[in-house]
Length: 496
Image (cartoon, rainbow, N blue to C red; front, top):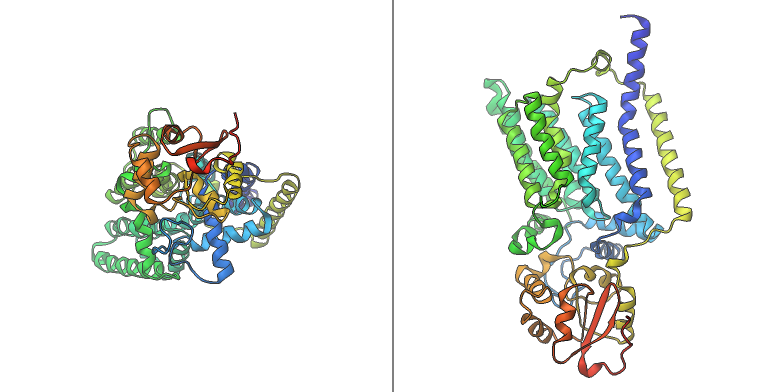
């Protein structure tokens, strides 16, 4: 090998080491500069409120104290660490804080994915997979705890797949990742569920005499991961809290992120599925049974609940990486330099430059751009009026619950569906969406409601207009207020 060719390989090896950092930096800047799009889910309000309560009290919530319908009922926060991070950042920088840590979470996810894929496929292909994953996940990139858990999910599954590719057991030093995931978000149960099929991939390709021993090592690791997931302030109750949402039955089909995928119009997810099928046919991709099961499971999850599309987007490439790497030839320079670690000083200097550029861009943009929450989730004027009237019990729209909590107003319902239960929330939706309008007066009377705060373009306000004993006193493009007829004399006039 000539000296010039060897130098070329060394340079490319150093460049490859910086590729994940560059991808992460570009991802961060994109989501930071478009940060207002991350502030569209009212759940962010109550997530921050709970995080602030934890910081203020130095304790964990065990009961509900934000609603008047479930006050005192048992409830735990399975995302407490993420909530604390969001609350701290919000206290420091306003809405720019949650935007920053959300952008960092997505950036880390993309960078880790590229780093893991680079061990099997060429860097350009790894970057392409990361970009496709980001496009698929755009609908679910919001300032909420699941984003902070995304990089941990990718790292966890990537390390497990790497162990399976080596036909070995995972290292016990990886268990803190599971503990971190369990404190960040309830989605850690996915990481536990994937240990089984990934272990079968390792065992299937191991030598016959080593299979039983290897399988037992994976079993012990799985038990260790289960224990690690209980290393939270709530202990074993974290497992129960994380799975409660799955018991909501019919209600899941009404909450957007838990709805099944809709192919009535063409979506990026539909394109990804067609592309995956085309790749299999075009390249004649042959997979082991465990890898097929993993892909089918992730696909089924994404088809069942749209919130699982991000797991499909980031984890399927990790499952396909080794088979694709064996099929797609790598360049000579790439192959020769794959095992050579670049000079640490060069990599460290490049990383510092990238971080400095990112922070400078952040500071300059924050200086002239005030981040604001989307107005459709913040009925400011309507809530101001309710506070002026000193209304005690408000029958609020599901999406307004988070904002009311942020204003220290007890809610009828909010995004914590697992707290309220399937029947309670289903009755609410049926009553306000016109499916069972006869339920509405009963709910208003049973819970001694003083006023209603519903979405302007929903059927609920029209039903209340016809309901005896209730009168509309306020309306704008976001919300409508009704009060009991006897209390409407001093009301403000409705806006046109």
